Length: 71
Image (cartoon, rainbow, N blue to C red):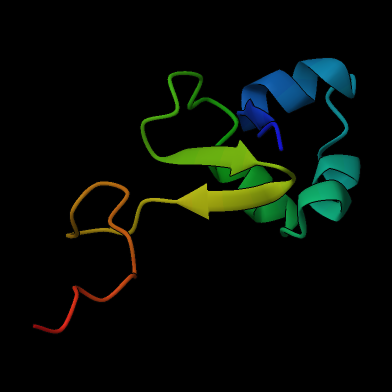
């Protein structure tokens, strides 16, 4: 399976700036789209296969929620 990785600014170009349509596609609020509209370098967000992934404040960048192996 090939992963489709993009950013909100790329989606804005593809959808002619329609924030509402992008919000529907990735399941996010229009305000969230505005928040990440200028993050072209994907420092705070990334869209993978139509799902918005964000970096939360104060945490390790893109930390996985998978638990370490039990020994």
